[in-house]
Each structure stands twice: as C-alpha cells, then as structure tokens.
Image (cartoon, rainbow, N blue to C red):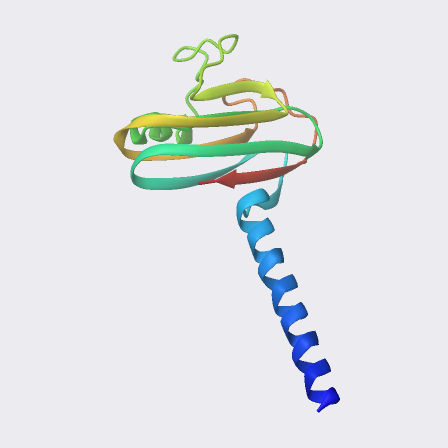
Length: 140
C-alpha cells in the first residue's frame, strides 16, 4: 500500500511540474524560433487575413538588421530588389518598420488584410550587413 501511495504521489508531482512547465512556456515565454540569416539574405513570412500582429525580434549574434511589416504590393517591390530609400526614408522608424536595429517589439493594429513580415540582412532597405546574423523571432 505504501508503494502505491509513493508512486501516486510521484506521478502527481511530475504531472504538476509538467503543467507548470507548459504554463510558463506558453504565457511567460511564448514560442519563437531562432534563425540564422546570411549576409544579403532575408527571412519572411506571410500572414493572411489579419488585423493585428504582435512581433518580437532580437539579434542574438551579429550586426543590425531591418524589420518591416509590408503590404503585398510593398513586398512585391522589395522582392524585385527595388531600393526602398525612395519609398521609405531610412532615417524614420515607425510601428511598421525599424531600420538598423538589433531589437524590434511591437503590437500593431492593422487594416484587415494580408501582410508580410520581413527581417532583412541586406542593403535592400537600409542596413549595411557585415556577415550572418542569428535572430530570435516570435510572431503572434
């Protein structure tokens, strides 16, 4: 009988630890991923039919990056390697973009639609890369 009580007690303790681990990871440290972005490359993801985005980007290793939330039209211009200096003044940061940065944290309300998030390690937008960067990205 004592053996069963000990096994049940251990099982309850392990279950409580597991639930606590899940709660901490979900609410205190929401899921995100770390990416290595080579020099003159970028990371992007398309979000469809959204009206808000919460984003956290942090450079863990390497130089500054550019982060932008783009409409499909802007993203199309970007992928055609059009220089954004004509469209966006790279000295002006807004909620939708941050240039030459190592940190970008925003919670943004948007007009409902499709958007691209771009983390750029090239000269296309504004930064001057100096090698690969390791970047933590979390989007909700």
